[in-house]
Amino acid sequence: MKRLIRAATGMAGLLLASALAVAQTPYTDDAVYRQLGGKEGIQKIVDTFIPLVLADPRIKDNFADFDMAQLSVRLQEQLCEFAGGPCRYTGKYRDKTMDGVGTVRDMTTVHQDLKITNAMFNALTEDLQLAMERHNVPNSVANKLVAKLAPMQRAIVTQ
Image 1: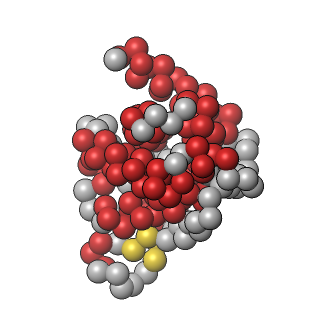
Image 2 (image 1 turned 120 degrees about the vertical axis):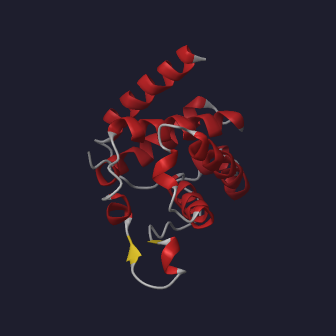
């Protein structure tokens, strides 16, 4: 298992590094979206992913004050759009403490005070890959999705 995690970490790092050169734009066809299982498949992946994140000692504390139901919706939008599906990722998150009222924060402002490191970003990537693996998403498809999401590292990693 440790060997698998190390391999995943190494692969994630390589994917992230190579994907930084790729513009953060969704796929123009829906092949990846369909291979993820469409909206239903993406919902299942996110439903598996969030508990993995919340149980991961490397990153779980960063999600203590987040509205996880809202985060689930945003993640589903994001994965769907970036996979080439019909969804539109709003990229907007309302703080739980605001009860849906007040300032809407974008990707950069949501993460700016969280002191996210590259190691934490990679842990999140590993958890996403594990969630996709648990739903039998082929590695080639998972890697394509991760490559599209990787440029967000610039907005998320602040340390």
